[in-house]
Image (cartoon, rainbow, N blue to C red; front, side, top):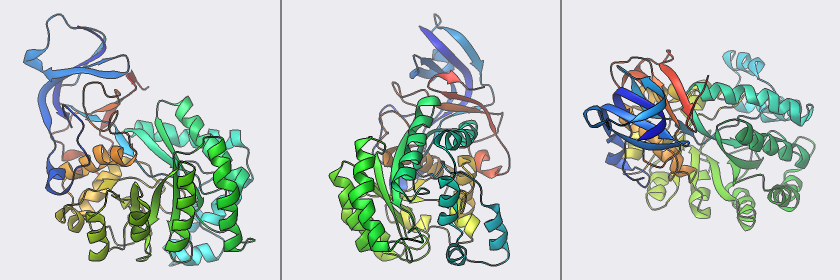
Length: 413
């Protein structure tokens, strides 16, 4: 056997599955298969083979061999919800939050999404790419191999297209696998009436996005003060006619009807869920919609954390993503999200690793190529530093336990 990279003496090869499961639900989320004292072979950018060290073929040779003694090997994180492309940080609003201003108050004063839109509109596409590339490289080093990137800080047709072109370019010029989402319905520009803006989204933006094939999905911020469930349905149904599948920002600040809109329109996922109850959980039980929690946003804004235990105990699947954005979740570090989900949402380490790999891959329709250690899947993995157990990854929430990142079969410097 000849391969490009051979990793030997792996303390634990995590998330090993012979075939790709459907989204993991309920009790199945607590089952995380680990192969102890293992080896992993990578060839031509895919996971070629794996097994126990005593069974390593004697004729195995590799261009590069890595000794992973005392270390774990994980499949790369799949981050299914980010706003990675933005022009500038918003730490001035962070100080306002410290002094007591609410999310709504900051938005009403010209901050929030409109602040990001103003900054983004003032820079070129190339400059936006260079700034966003820094963040793309950052999440690679923190273990992410697949990322969804939304527009939504443009709020004009030209600037929404600019954002999506940058997101596509990140997918071409980095080893990240990128899925893009059109989120023109993120906020309403101050100088435009809401109905006029919705008309612009429906009649101008969506066709323009589709014409350039810039988005895989369509999203709406379904929330009080932003877009109603009825408006959400209207926008995503229009997107569906152009082949854009819906994902919904749902129930972040209030019980906004976003979950209901997501289920009604057949969304792939409903994301946030800080404010949901039994009614929404029952609806989700009878759907194929992936509930997605964004613990970084709840943490940063001081909101209730999504009721993970209620959802999992009801038999639902759950995904965990970062929501990386400049206003409410300025971190794309998925190890931190995993830790927050354990600490604040009472998920087990096994549940949260499944939520951040297989279930997020399912939410992006990429489960056939990502999310687990499976022969034939893309060789996106990371090797930890010497650590005692899988649980140490979320336990050591302030530490970087990732030593080596391999994306598309190549070690990242």
